[in-house]
Image (cartoon, rainbow, N blue to C red; front, side):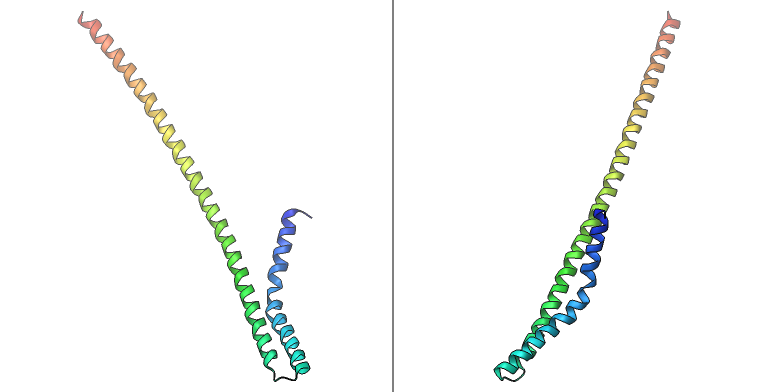
Length: 126
C-alpha cells in the first residue's frame, strides 16, 4: 500500500469515528457513574456528572480536531497561493528581462544606424 493511500485511509478512519466518540464516550462514562452510584448508594449524581463530563470531553476533542484540520487546510491553501504567486512573479520577471533584451537590441540597432548615417553624411560633406 502506497504512503498516500495509507494517509488517506488513516484520515478516513479518524474522521469516521468522531460520531461514535460523541455518543459512546458519554454513554460509557454515564454507565460508569451509574455503577458507582449503585455501589455508593448515592443519587444519580455521578451518573449525571460523568455523562456531562463525557459530552464536554467528546465535544472538546471534536472541536480541537476540527481546528487542527482547518489549520492544515489553511496551510495547504496558503502554500498553493504562494506557489501561484511565485510562478506569476517569475513569469513577470522573465517577460521584463525579455523586454529589456529586446530594448537593448533595438538600441544597438539604432546606434548602428545612426553611426552609419553619420558616417555617410560626413563622407558626403568632404
